[in-house]
Amino acid sequence: MSGERVYSVDGAAATPAVPISLAEAGLRERDDLQEWVVAHPEILGENVMILTFEFDRWQTSSGARQLD
Image (cartoon, rainbow, N blue to C red; front, top):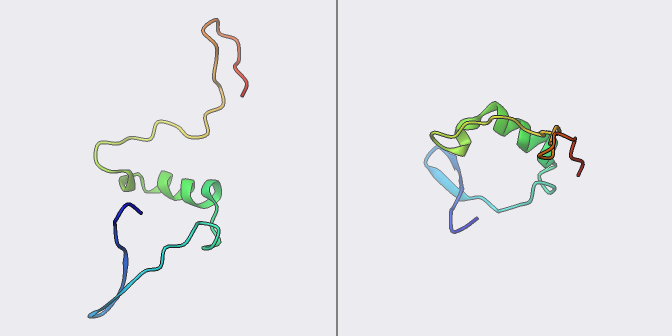
């Protein structure tokens, strides 16, 4: 978490949160995190715009469909 600290605050008490993985939280990147970021793009910062996600229509310079 690059030196950032997260706390759980309850009234006047602040308790350091324990870092866990998405899996430990019962979350998945595609099903949960990605959908949350799309619904709340402000989490990415100011002046950031989501143009698309899961784009699957890539083409070569000749216009042929590019597959992964």
